[in-house]
Length: 225
Ligand SMILES: O=C(CO)[C@H](O)[C@H](O)COP(=O)(O)O
Image 1 (cartoon, rainbow, N blue to C red):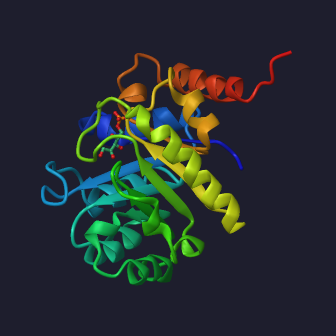
Image 2: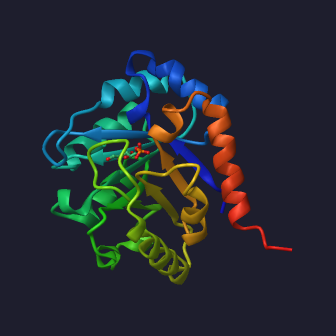
């Protein structure tokens, strides 16, 4: 599976959002990660469907929407209509996880389930085969710029094993505290899709940071001569 880098616009300059998005895409990003926070499921507020609709006018790149909202279903249709390619949600925020997955798919989007650091992998039981992506949070959701929780590396590896056992084409995305320094270990543990906010938008050269991230991923898989 290809390695995907998805800058989180949470750390972008919102006053110049279209420009920021096009700069990271020109710099080698594959997807745009769109963090939606409601001030209820998480203690922070961000952006909604009209912002996504505006971004959709400036790019055809895949936009993956991470819903940190409760309840979930009302917003799925709005984000699908606004141009989302993939919509992920937290199982704690939906009373009917399977129904929400079906709803996302019925709107023509790919579906992802998000696990907080303390959420057990058992929430994937019975629903994993219907998913296009599992998103493992490596920080507690709500804010950018937090430190990667090292204890999540075995969880990434365990999730990779579950995906392999399922025999399905499911992406394993990791989000929270991903940097040039740790992305190799995150990849080696089993991730194939990397969200990075502050590490990219907080750097002086987005393209150079993305390039350095790809080099670290490649290096992690090099066999020592
Ligand atoms: O979902 C998120 C927070 O809830 C962000 O996507 C995530 O934290 C990325 O930011 P950073 O790379 O700065 O940690």
